[in-house]
Length: 180
Image 1 (cartoon, rainbow, N blue to C red):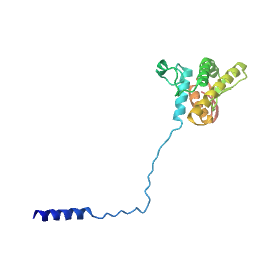
Image 2: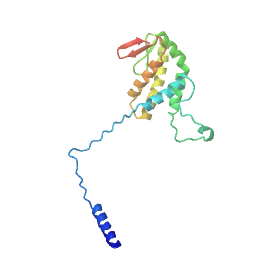
Image 3: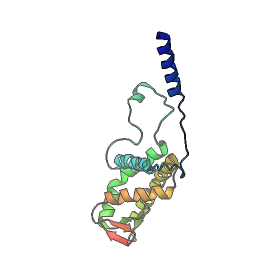
Image 4: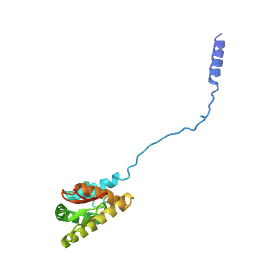
């Protein structure tokens, strides 16, 4: 009797386990929409902030770490290199002259992140030339580091420099030159 009950149960389990399942493909293909925003310029803006904070305040351009106190040679430095450090230092040294000329309206910040002489002052022209030369070094380094064009870096840098410009400074906007 026990054998019969066991046999019936086995037959039931086997018949349940052998149930057929039909798999049908849908008539329309399955669509998956993955929306993702990649902000390429977030790293560029971070680099701009690091350099401009060094120029306008204290600090250094390279990464901050305690490592140099313990290790003399570091091979995976994420900094910009000595050219950018020197250009930023020179910009920091001439910052008060540039701010004075911007405030007086003798020079202005254009839409490419460069200074332009607004009158025929030869002393201002020398300062503008030196400043633009150092800015070009920095722009090229940021573009190379982030794999973008110098023109894109110039546009982003121009926004930062124009927002940091003192009141009374001429700034170039899409509508032309305006006084901040």
